[in-house]
Length: 317
Image (cartoon, rainbow, N blue to C red; front, top):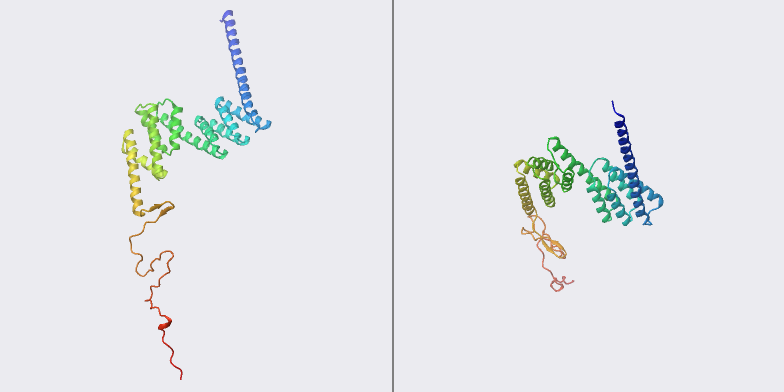
């Protein structure tokens, strides 16, 4: 049986704990109110937004903060938007796109950076939302790669950092299968996040190099796949990708040289290189130079006659 003193002590402890919970909740509510007041002051500093628009945007900002977006990040977006005089309804659409990404459980740091980058470049709402969508898709694929590795029993530290790195590589057209292999192999070999980061950046560099050389995404994917199948050593695979890439570029240059003849370049453009072949095939009319009168080659030209060379008419009877 519980003694009276223990019961009193329990009730006191419960009361204190409840009081702290209520106080913490009240403090949190007050903090949000203070944060919204700061954001309202930013909107009020500009004459661009009406009272109705300010209220609308503050509600969207509150949704972001309550969803887990940091106040400083939300404030930064608003400050940049106000600085660039972003339309209120465009700003709301951008907030909604960011909120939707957060609701999907994706890491939003990279997306927030994309938004601020777009605002700094005076990008349109359509361009910014498109960038958000693309980044969100790459983050989703990156998270999928990480989840697959963890489902195979691999213990991976720094999940958020790895997802960000993988998303950046996907943005540079590194095949998803190659990155999945990198995470699994690198983790099995006990490589650190820093090492996996360096290798991922190297793959990004090689992928960009392949893209710049004219290879399609399908060709790049095949090139990476062949290199991975050729070895189980990460360094060798990166080296094989580069060697295969250089071979592809060399082959493309040779084929291009056989199909096209070199051309001479002038200040006004590119001029065709004169051909060494005969001017015309048998039975064809030779090509005339510009400005020349065409020559009739179907018959032998007759000599010209002058009025003095003409035969006089017979005398009249």
